[in-house]
Image (cartoon, rainbow, N blue to C red):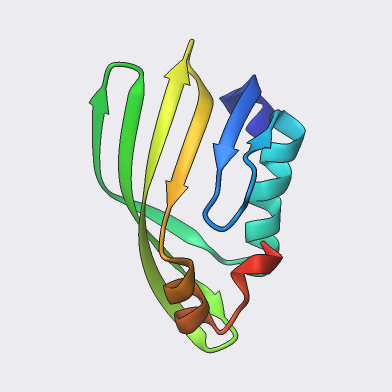
Length: 108
């Protein structure tokens, strides 16, 4: 599914990673790693805006961590080219993630 939604040379920037992920396989793995950490994670779009090829999304993540159900908010800046994600910058507070979930973000 991810392969159809992203450009072959997609770049993803996740908080806490020193280097971006590059390419469909690495991008899909980064998403799979997050879902392995929080299998029931659901993201709800709270607000969105566009500016040219950029889409800005403010989201709420809801899932279950080691401490039970949690809620976390963040923002993505997604560059879309030819109908596919070419770049995604994900922003959220990793310390808050660890606090509310009881999980280590370093695993993702």
